Length: 37
Image 1 (spheres, helix red, strand yellow):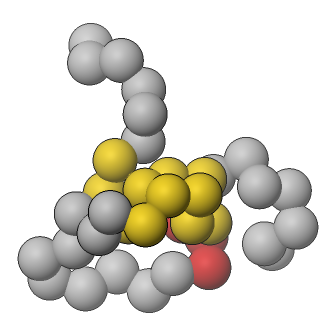
Image 2 (image 1 turned 45 degrees about the vertical axis):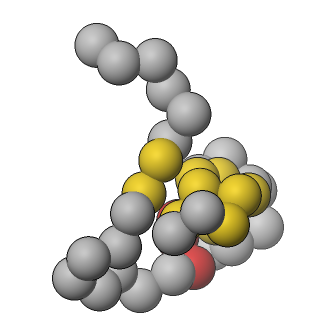
């Protein structure tokens, strides 16, 4: 886990974070960069 970089997101304004390596906590801001559905 953490080697493919397929799960990159922006977490609390910090881009290119690997979602699989970050523990979620209340109040986090997560942006995937995907267009809204």
